[in-house]
Image 1 (cartoon, rainbow, N blue to C red):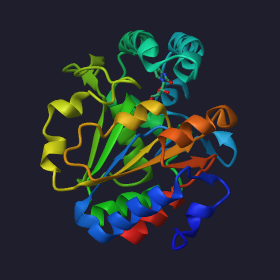
Image 2: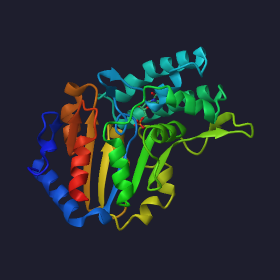
Image 3: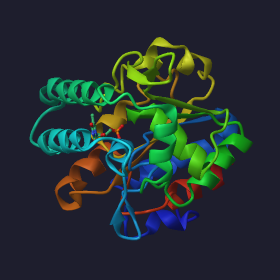
Length: 288
Ligand code: TMP
C-alpha cells in the first residue's frame, strides 16, 4: 500500500489493510488481461458535488431546465422526498426496502411516461444540466479502452441520460456496457414507456445483465474492481463467474458519520466526500 500514496489520504478509510494489499498485489501480478470493472453511475462515476455545489443525478437532470412541465418536476420531487429517506434509512433491512423501491420506480416511470419526451429533449436536458463526471473519469474510461478492460456500468437511473452524459463529457467506448432503465420511443420518436425489466437500487444482483451472457464471456477475467456508492451496489458483480479477487471501492458522499462504520464493513476501501476518481486511477495505474 505504500506504493499507492492515495490509499493513505485522510479521506480514504480501509478496515483491513492486509486484505486490500493482498488483493491489489494479486491484481498487479495478474495484470490487465484478468481484470474487469463494474461500476455504478450516479455519485460513483458522477460527482456528488462539484466545487461544493450538489450535482444532478440522472433523475435530477430531468427536473432541471425548461423541457419537462412543472407538474412532472413537482411530482418527481415529492416522490423523492417521500422515498429517498426510506432508501437511505440504515435501520431498515434490504428486504423491507425492496417493495417500497419497486413502488417508487413504478410511480416515477409512469410519471415520466406521461410527458412523451424525445431523444433530443434528453440531449438538451443533459447539456444544460449540473450532472458531472468525476475528475479523472475521462482518463479512467480511456485507459480501460486502451487496455481492453471491460467496464460494466450498472445503474438504477436512466440509461438514455447516462449515455448522453458520457458522450457529452467523455467518450462512450466500445468496451463499455451500460445496463440501466432505457426509454422506449414510438415511430414519431416520442417516449411511450420503459424497455425491459425495471432496475431499482436493490435488484442489481438479478437485473437484465444476468439473463445475458455478459459475465460468462468474461469468465477468464477473475479479478473485479467494483465501485459503488450504496449498499445495493455491492451486489452488482454477483453474476461474475470464477471471481478470485474482488476489490470493493465505496464512495460515501452523504451521512458520512452515520454510515461510515457500515460502509467500512462492506466495502474494502471507502472514499469520503471526494470529487475525483484519483484513488481508483492510482490503483489502476499499478495494475496496467
Ligand atoms: P443508483 O445510483 O444506485 O443506480 O440509484 C439510483 C438513484 O436514483 C437512487 O438513489 C434513487 C434515485 N431516484 C431518483 O432520484 N428519482 C427517481 O425518480 C427514482 C426512481 C430514483
